[in-house]
Image 1 (tube, rainbow over the protein chains, first blue to last red):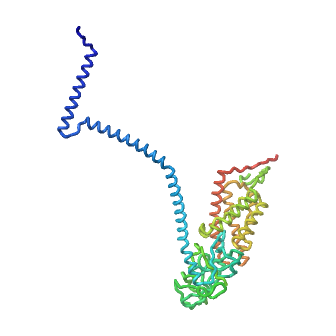
Image 2 (image 1 turned 135 degrees about the vertical axis):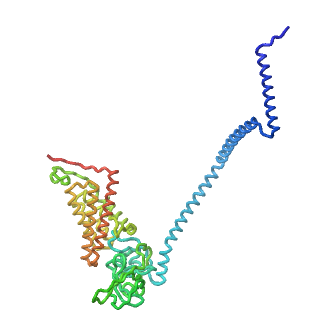
Image 3 (image 1 turned 90 degrees about the vertical axis):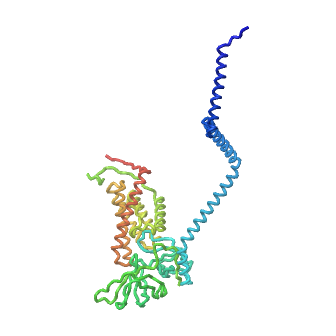
Length: 272
Length: 182
């Protein structure tokens, strides 16, 4: 019996032969590149694709592992987070306290200096200003209970601030020396010339200085012995000298106060 | 017929003004704010007067009588904080009376008109205050300084009042009941 090769069998045979031929060609190509010492394009392509596949798998695996680890460590992370938040809040608070303490240093230094010069003084804090800024006065947190009395002098380490004009049980009002209603005896230190220092809203005007006085810009002016201050408390320095009028028996000068009234914080009341 | 005059209108606008007690609460807050922070907002020797804004807006809304009552209370508050002997009380009351009186003669709804009124009120109030202070023995000779400060205070207070009114108008709708008579 003669076997008959069908069309299907021939196609299968050709396919096998084709595969063998392609394999041979690939092998030849590989051998050729191998002889030249270069990676073949096929190997390079396969390696590249494999690398990307490995990267993708590694990323997914890493992600899953990370997520699993994170989930497993969540309670620990939450505890760490809470601890760090508490620590941060504490440090922020400490930072604010330190900044506040740092800001208070000049005022505290001033008040310490004033206490050194006037041992019996009553330390006080400025708690209010004139609401309309019409007059130059401040409110302090010491009153009759602290033995503060009307006309007591008020100073800082820098010099004279003003005098008490109103006393309440727990607070008092201080008229600043730059207010127009303020008048205090003053002495130009280097020549011992007497004068009256009157407020001009921003500075002081020295009036009734003897015509013979040899005033200079920068001369130190201190308080004379008076109702509110003892002699020698610094008021400020002469910044301007007015030429005496013809026939006048006295002269005047402008004094720049030693105290910075814009930043009054702590003061000392010189209780009698 | 003038646009600003309403003397010939035969109608009455019934305006329910703010209640007195909340207004006094605002005044206390305003004085307290000024006494604590005035030093930090001084501009050319002047600070915005929140009390004047409150008094003018209230008196313009409710008229002389209720305005004067509020003026007395606000002035007393300010005198007690400033340590002055009644000058702010008199000045603020007279200002409230003046504002309450003249606000009946023109439309005082616009922010520009009310702002200008606040500025004028500051000048009037300061003039009365310094006049009384002079009578009480405050040293003379600084009128120019005080006038200069009063002008600045009038300007910045008017600006604050206008800003407040503009912001307020965006959020609050005032109801005005107009009753017309034949």
